[in-house]
Length: 303
Image: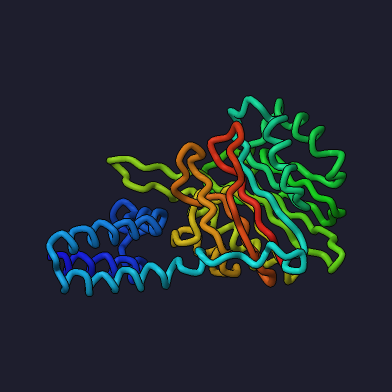
């Protein structure tokens, strides 16, 4: 029995993409929390030791190898500690439209001395506070709807990005694109906030709006003429979730670090993303909590 359970866990890890989405989008739900499936290993290990099961202990090698194959690289130390290993630091944060301390949130983000700051869920009342706090160090900025980008470097060809799913009203503006003129050349930076998902007994893991928005975002990135792209945003999805495939399939693997960002009180998934094309995230990490229900994440990026 223990050996069979170990084989099942290994099979789910290795073949998670084969779990169907037809009923309640079970595949996407599994992939959202896929790293946590590794917790089955110590449980099975304890049972195997208790029962002195050599077969059970041997079979545990299968889920261990499968888990390390998927996530072992995220446990390696990043090479972003050396100044030569990165060209810029980016910070991404869903600041929450219910955040009661935008000034304190802005100060927390500045502590990492980032070159780029992307914010989502900006409200009309909080926006002036963020703008005032960030203006001295980030003279170049743009805001569209509820998303914004602040940069130490000049911006060019700034434009809104339409990723609205069908049936959403015109007031829903949650994405933008800007060219950032770095010393090494211009980089396209996208800031996006994809629709939320819902989990319920009736519909299961409901993500059609997010998935539709991800297709539109992926199409915009595919049409981007600049080679180097940085995507910053609350994508309401992990990189393992197939719902994000239209975007993630075009981007490089995310650098070392799990950087779970949600929920802030007990983070179990990284749904806030810093992703690149023709560039490398050498390190990604979650920052201390702010007044938001998300944790900020910071990444070192090598162009």
